[in-house]
Length: 302
Image 1: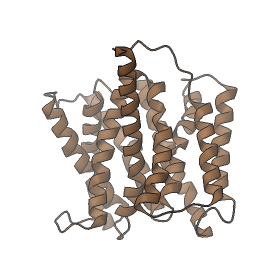
Image 2: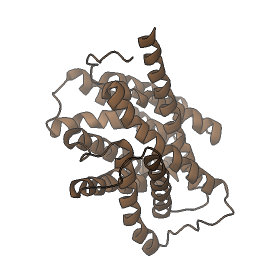
Image 3: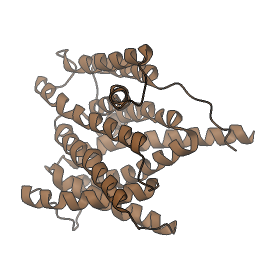
Image 4: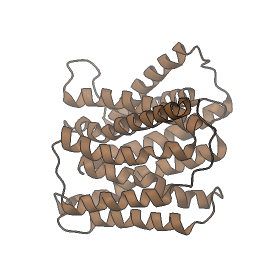
């Protein structure tokens, strides 16, 4: 019963992570609704994340010290895990439905497979290759039919929207191959957020994307704050869950992120989707099932 209870607790955490992460697509859509531009949004997202994770790290009484290797790691993660993918996310979410963005985010584990092969971290698997093909079919179901998107002009933004998942997949493989330079999940995300904010500030000022942080706050500003807090906390919790229950178990959150993201878009944005989009969601979920690595035996959770 103790083992079963522990396993159910981990499943509950997995569900909460998926629901929380799924909301960030719709919150991002709300954040750009008043015309806020990507560099300004990214800067404040990173500042909020650094403050929140710094507070968590302080409450844990963990060190804020960082080595040269840790600083290099934070720089790489800030670039490929935040600045590039978040820029393309905010640009594309301004033009694409939030539910479609949630479906596209499910391509992260699909894209991770070929990247892992290129990095020599995985072996070829016909089953997982088939899963990747299902994922590509899912994207095609959104891009090709005339009635899948509200406007045909939106199709041009699909390649931009796919840049984010590609870089997130690259980030995951880099962390898996070379580690986090001795930093735990909270420390790694704190330093990546801090370094990323320092990189984003001049880009924000030079591009004219500055967002006034003073109140009053409207829906876009509140959505940015909520999205930043959720993203920082769920990402750190995801890394903890992967260490606790295994990367394969933690990867199942992709199902909940995709499904809840579509539901959040219907709830928060009032979006409704054509049959083609629902078919794309179903095909993507099949692809996710096929591409997941097989579960290795895990120690019993007490």
